[in-house]
Length: 474
Image (cartoon, rainbow, N blue to C red; front, side):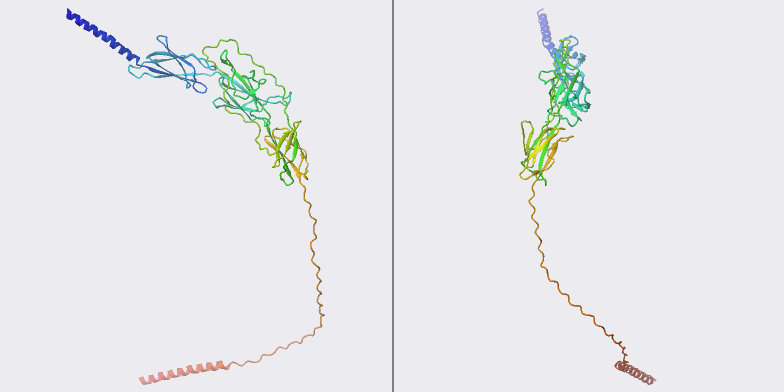
């Protein structure tokens, strides 16, 4: 009986060991399987990451929250989950996007001891689109009866990332763009009398009624859509009008002598040009979107603050180097004095405006040629115009002509007297002389005769010898 008790006790101890040691090992093996879930959120217009939105993961079996994540600057959120089935949902959205609570399901079933079953889910956020209207006006109107609108103008439009999203948009027309964006308007093909530079201003739907505007006019900036912080909604229409100033250039006044040499120190006076600024009516401020003040809790707060412009306008005016002197009198006329190169410049003068320029003084002894005064005007697309005054310098008196020395007169030679012709005596006719007969030269004949005689004698001797020899033979 006692032995039986020991056996039972041993069995109980073994069972306790199995329960205490074996079960935790099994649980740890199950817990060691962790599956990585990656969620990416991008927008549908640019395909860029959407940061700062909330992703919620719910266990579909228990209905409990398994994870809550916020996307980083890369639009990504990650978490580790045990095996099981889950529902993944985007629960917050940026203002200006369509709220979509459509959930996506994912199931993990990685075997024990493995590295898990990593899975990725992608969400695409849809932009709310709106209409951006663009236009242009004169910054300074000619008169109260003139229309301020500039109709012959076009615009290129760039988004905040520098993408050219529209080109050659006529003034007064619109383009469809995301309401969350920030847009740079670039005027082009407008009349040459206007300029797009930092003197231009803008009237738009966002800042027209702001206390910092000048009757609705504000400095140039990127255009956005109005945003209501109470409703966390953007308006779906925005308007932007750029007011272009009149272009300015330089009038170059030049004084030279009749040979084109510069005259320094000449003084002149020129009339200025003005633009009268008419009264600017206050803009008609649109009513608040209103209606309710309770925003959808799924929306994050937004902003209509513009981002930086992708292209900045240039400074007004045309670069120049002033060598003369420029002042103004009490009537605001320009007082000019030419410099060493004979020029003086009237800078930043309105184009298509006349300036009457009168030369007042010149160097001693010089005279100012007509025309004086003259009119200077910058026309067309020119950036400068030149007005030239000619001052005639005195010529030194010409020396009196000296008589050329004349040679002393020489006595004319007396011609020799021509001899009187004498009567000629006729010559007697010459009688031709008869030639005398010439006897032949006998000396030549005698020498020939001697030669003949010698030859004959030689032949005779040879004949005699021959006969002698013939007789002797016989």
